[in-house]
Image (tube, rainbow, N blue to C red; front, side):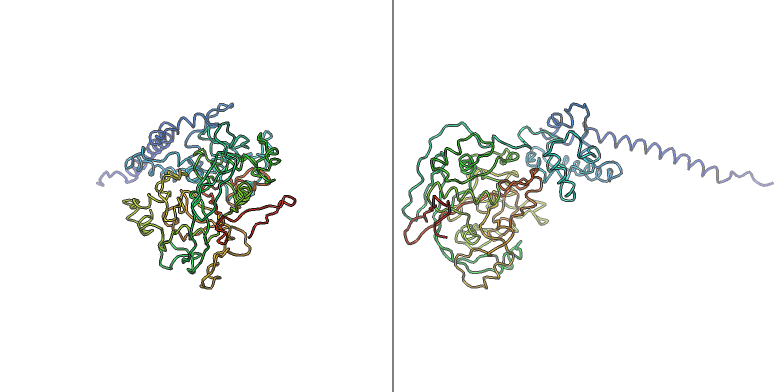
Amino acid sequence: MTPNVRKPGHRTWLVFSLGIIAGAILLILGNRAVEYTSTDNFCAACHVHPHATSSWKLSTHHDNQSGITVHCAECHLPPHGDGYLREKIRLGAKDIWGKMTKDTSEFNWEGKRSVEVAQHFTYKTSCIKCHDNLFPLTLSKDGENAHLYYTQNKDELHCINCHLQVGHYDPRATHDQNLAFGLTSEEKEIYTEPATVDSFIDFTEYIPQSSVSFNMKAIPGGTFTMGSPANEPFRKEDEGPAVTIEVNSFYMAEIEVSWDEYLAFYSQTAAEGRSTDTEGARKNGQVDGISGATPPYGQPDQNWGLSKRPAITMSFHAAETYCKWLSTVTGKKYRLPTEAEWEYAARGGTQTPYFFAGSPKKYETKGFWNKLFGPDTTVINTYVIYVRNSQMMTQMPDRVAPNPFGLKNMLGNVAEFCSDWYSPTIYSQYNNQKVSDPKGPESGTEHVVRGGSFKSDAGEVRAASRDFTHTDAWLKTDPQMPKSIWWYSDVRSVGFRVICEFDPTTGKPVPYKTNKKTEQQTSPN
């Protein structure tokens, strides 16, 4: 007889069926896990920062006439099919690691409420999924211009460049013409005359018809090596070849032009949409016909505060106009520093990467050891406001000690305009010879910017580090047509510092004079 043997197909079918059932269960459980971990409550378990939930509930993504609620995952993950699970795993792992290993009370949550940070956690494809019609009938004319500009520059712009607050409302942020900016009713002592300076010494300047004063430091002329040696850490090609430069004596502002100083100019010269008696001031000879900035589109100080904090977001044109106005009201020739004067003043008689001790490698956050244990910031924190101590915003000038010339924040807080046109090869054009008071190329498209900012790491706050204006990039999200010549929309880390020229033959500041008939400058160049 032949034995009764069960055919192999029965067992295979059983295993296959059990596999299907198990797979279905896992799929259902996995889907439910994905859904649960995408709920607002689950997100809030890790994202414990104070404003996250409350600002979302006040935003137009939650509080709106239609009653539609946009949930966390709908903005902070891409749509399904566009890498949803991949990004969910990546961001989820990052959040869990932060929850387990970091103290959330030490996070600078306010500093993270910026386009630079938010664009890494908000997806443009998610915005477009809901807002696929960019030109609805209810869109304003300014909105049409802005959305038209976006369609022409999709690769360079993110929706949150203009609409950062739609998901998390910030009552301090504005995205409209700010006609009230700088107006104040506070009464203080008003200066009627500028400072009288009869020698080459430090002095305090007074801005007439305002309550504002600022300190100027007498910087003795001398010779120094401009640029950096080839072996300096984080050196860039445009910092060399190093060249010997001679500069004459000048006066330089102790701190970057503050909001107090800039708003004195703004209140006395701005006309469009302002309630101040600008024409009356001009008739009394206070502003000498200089037209100042138009009202900004938004909040230039980013709600970080005014007072002595450095003025930011004004354009190079605005900074030059400020210097002309300051010259007019004080009778002294004020201007932006040349690049050579700036670096000479920043070095304070030293030739090292900083005017204080230490290697950039020691202070930089890059590198395995510094990333793991953190850089030694004891010394640099004393003199520089940079990414490690700034809380990602400008700070008051008294946070740091001065350099050997008595100047504060030359290397940090905000980068500073110089008068030179930018050229990456200008040092080589000096032919490695001793050059006296160079003023840079005769022409160009962008101007030099020197010094680091609150966003910069240690390698970018070296005395030799160079940069330049990025006019198109800094005006990307200005919704106005034409774009403003006075205010930048997309850079918050640049300001400026003034120089007052010194005449060694008279031992006094160079006077600034204008021809009342032509309003043209007649002081020496």
